[in-house]
Length: 83
Image (tube, rainbow, N blue to C red; front, top):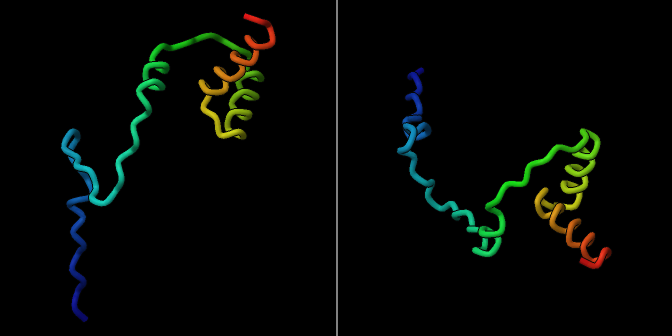
């Protein structure tokens, strides 16, 4: 029985900085300019572990990003408190 010819795997690994996009794969759609501008400032503060877990679980269960959930919650708070 003849030995199998080894598969050519040379195209599977790229040197850092020299990777090329795979053919026939659609590019990611860029975020709308308004959203990109709105999401460029960090907001950092500490919360309890329980609040963090509840917030993340709620966001995941409702297909929301964390910053989207925070914005929605704050918008609703502002509506209710008249500011």
